[in-house]
Image (cartoon, rainbow, N blue to C red; front, side):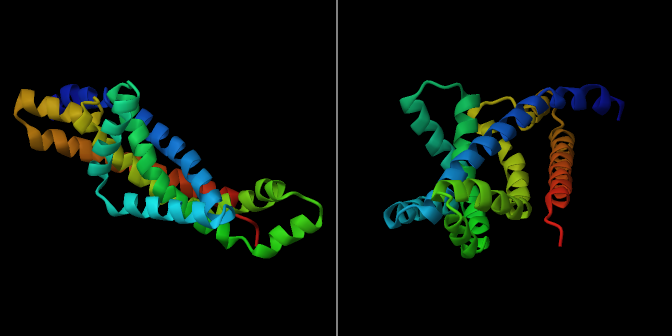
Length: 214
């Protein structure tokens, strides 16, 4: 027990910063890409909506580890990025497909009459989306988005296959050195549980704070 707290936990936690950085980058970039795709699906033309629907369906149908490798090698063929940045961007692309559907549903949940009322008051379509539709849709999206955030926390472990030294890779190093794989990976499981739990609780608190009265 003393060895776990004096050796294993501090060593694994050296990869925690990398895990958090990958999660924040993938979730943030995925949100921006997903929001743009959702707006195009709802308010763009039929052609763009159909193309985006097919792309997001393909991404959601394939295993994340396969998509990560495909995106990683595609990105590496065009831009010379480090495994950390290429892995984060790859996860962002994967997450954007799910966030697109979450945000599309939230946009559609806002009554069409509100767009008509905004246009009647003299707003342009873009102004109505920005000031009327989007604030309400983002509130509605928080419950589903919190689930996606928890998934991205766990999916951050996939960059392990690219050699990025996050907590799972650190556990693998420790296991190879000490021949104690069970102890190492149980410690990682506890860390991921805490990260997911705190993420869900934090976003639940945000949802309560931003909930529309009544």
